[in-house]
Image (cartoon, rainbow, N blue to C red; front, side, top):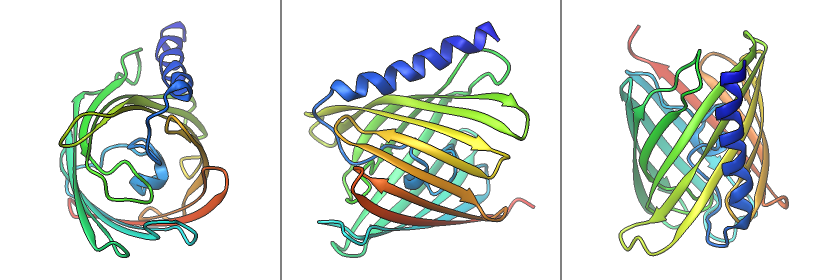
Length: 218
């Protein structure tokens, strides 16, 4: 248990440090609402995830559609499309180091894509992610924190952090901080293939997301 304390403190520090950064965007790659999944982890190989994010009162983009596919156990890729602005984006995530479930080592994820909830920016980011199981199939803590920068200029940088509790492998309340604004949310795996998410963007705007996952490996 003592070995598990190290990644927990590291992830919590990343989340707290994010509060001091003034350059940020709306959300991060570890956010369940952005990923369409309860924990924001990489997709398994031969799995396809389609997700639709709807923000009724957004100033720029109200609806974002995404497709993501698990290429390998260490890599997934996807595309997104903002219906209002009619702008497409792409994303790739690589798990350079897998986490040690029994030890202290977190996963190291490097990726490029849109980390904004209400936009279609292109960013490069690196993050650490760690899951700690307290009660098998009942209670799990998921932490992600890292640094993102804009593309292609790489002129602005901001911290990203997400904390998620997963209850009974189905319900996941989460807190996400982008360096400027906090976001609260709740993801629910209604079935093995359907995930529904509702969250409170910037503590003032409601948003809804639905993700459907197909497993082509079976």
